[in-house]
Length: 547
Image 1 (spheres, helix red, strand yellow):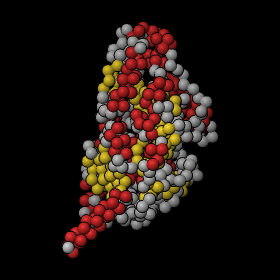
Image 2 (cartoon, rainbow, N blue to C red):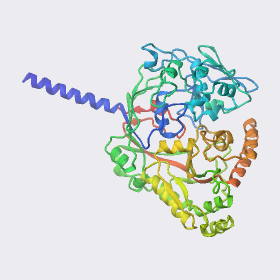
Image 3 (cartoon, rainbow, N blue to C red):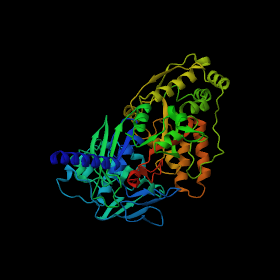
Image 4 (cartoon, rainbow, N blue to C red):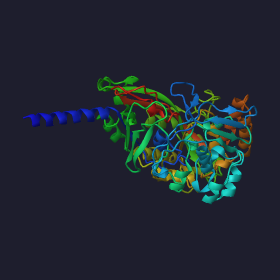
């Protein structure tokens, strides 16, 4: 009898322990495949969800402040900047441990200033194929010379120095710029500039696509690209320990599957799927049924927005502005917004998103939905009723049903004026590969702002950022380039220059603007202190457990 009671007691304790453990575990969903974990290459929202949990940067955005403000993370304080704006002196925190890793051969590895220099060199090193090269190209003294001299030689990568990057000592970093670049402080808060120990670079052959070597609050325990990833709390973290001990990410591509998992509490946070919007939201507030289940709602504006891109090197689409104008006038953007966002998004009125300095809410786009005008423009372009035009390739960003439906919508809209599209369905990693190789023709495009500054939008349209950089359109206009130089160096008339740059872009029409994102986010009551943001990717360490 005593043995039976003991067994029951052990089982009960085990169940209680498992229950408590689950309350301290965050269960989250990934909606698309992860392309890479390498901070030098990662440049999409999906991989950022994982990368920023383990990797840290010199600075981070204050979780509690709006407008956004930067504060020290791996740095002791904000940088000392020279009067001419070209030298940044940064003190590094002492005693910051890297996560245990085979590269360190069972030794404790502490953060040093040289680790940041290694990562800057990785961005410049051609074999890395970094998506972040644009961030420092032509900005740091000696970085372009290093890129050229190192070529594809790993030995030269290790041996050569960059004149504008100096580790004065283990805890003092100096960055010297060629000319003032006020946005450099934002660059130091992006995962592109997260520190990389040389031991790890050598151990992984300069390929961090499937591993994270970081100092952050969560340590990567398991990573399965086609399934998800598991993190555990790093108990030797240099700052306050997160409340949650584990984070489990699962890849669930379909909206409805994610929704059902959320309702059954297998997922703790979810962006409300469009198909469930009206069952979840009643007269603008959360339904009583969901409230009774302990579910909370936050409506959150984002710094993410969407458009349609053209490959400006395409001999037809890219060389015929009248044709692009015809396409722009043929798309019913209001209907698109209704079908795919339930009107929760906001129609774009500018190439800049709301929330950045200089955005003008009274700006207007040079196109509206007008089929008659679209047909006239198409005839003026030399293709009346679409005669003589080939079938154009239109690429999706994923294999999800919604992505295919969006592409079908555009196909049907263009068919009304005689333009035919062939839809190419891609996984997200394949889409990114095509973008980085400049193999896209006509596609849905979008951007989550890296930092709240118009420079981050315009860099998507600069010649120096042609593939593998982020300018997948191959757009180039010398006037825009000159205006951008003025913008980068001018701190007083930036809004005027922004307007001029926008006029140039809208006249050339490499993009057809669609809408600005707004998220309806649901989360279970076990989560406290949740403040969603389109800019802060390392927010999970700030979440609190109710229990």
